[in-house]
Image 1 (cartoon, helix red, strand yellow):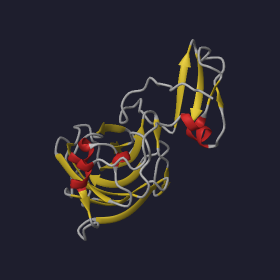
Image 2: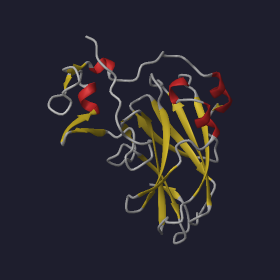
Image 3: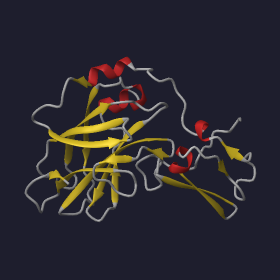
Image 4: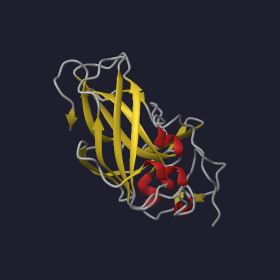
Amino acid sequence: MTSRRIFWGFGSAGSTRAAGPSSATLSSAGSSVSLTKSLWRGGQVACLLGALTTLSACVDPSEAWPQGTPGAENAAMDAFQVSQVPPSATSTYFDFESKVQLIGYEVNEVEARPGGRVRITWYWRASAPPVGDWKLFTHVITQHGRQIAQVDAAGPLRGAGSVSSWRRGAIYKDEQEFTLPPDAEPPFITLGVGVWTDVFRLNVTSGLQDHMNRALVVRIPTGHSSRSGSW
């Protein structure tokens, strides 16, 4: 069966209208159809009725995911490979559908003031890199769950290519530096990370997460606490 690629009207991965939510909605003429990731993965056929009258009846779930060539490594990524997580880093484990794992991080700031700089290094392991054009995202979140910044593209690793080009089994060093927004509320901010493409995000299958498929990795005090730390 032949199906069409669906392009969805969302913003970038880090915005409020985030590309890659675990559930997204298409609207037309006052109607909406909610498509969830589990529907594709359950091997079912998604029939879009009512709102999307111009779309042919069904979409084959095997064709709904981004296509690519497994093992199409990007040599530019090799510069960011490390043999192991350094002893100075905090070991952690967040699994994204057995494809990518966050296995450590190192934050340079004990405390971050609004308007100040934050430097953090993530350590990712590529167990079975997803096919397509998958990328990393980083969100800055207040204690009340409000997203106040996205730094998805910050850092040399993220500018070198996509997660899909990682070498299977390799560990990658992902350095980021960004300015903390002036509206960062005390006593802390949380950094949430994940893996996304188009309007999909990989599920966080191990580790603390929120309803938006973000791994909640580290809290950084913003002036009213003495030290940073993991959740």
